[in-house]
Image (tube, rainbow, N blue to C red; front, top):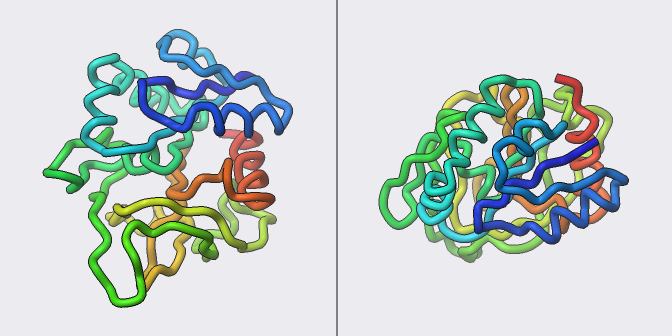
Length: 205
């Protein structure tokens, strides 16, 4: 199985690539549209600012490629961390920026709350809202590793697969059809992170 990791100049490419290798699959870090569209699975990583990431995607033409992956539905697509946020309609990070609009919703900054620092950084427990979804089925709830200052407001509840608590419910995993996203870093989240990546790679769409 070939797993394309989209290289658009921003992202945690090395750690995700190593995680895929450890699961016994072939990671292909690439910005080549043909290679992405020919892969069995596609991962959209991301770190940094939303607007910068979207600029890089557009300048490389890879925004259209990711949208094509989602539109055909042939290859499961996974956005990780900022990559998950890019799946949404827009973000309010340093101004309003349009996203890929594969999932309806807006990415907003955490409000200041006593006892809850921003960025949200560390291990938090997942709560599954749709435990029968193929991505989650058979997995026990557990802790995963988050690092983020912005979180997604999901417009359609059916897209929300799991949340975590950080003073209020926070979007942790989303999914619609062949498109999935994880706000946390599964590649840095121990055994549960490994199992979630493995489930994603085993998905039959």
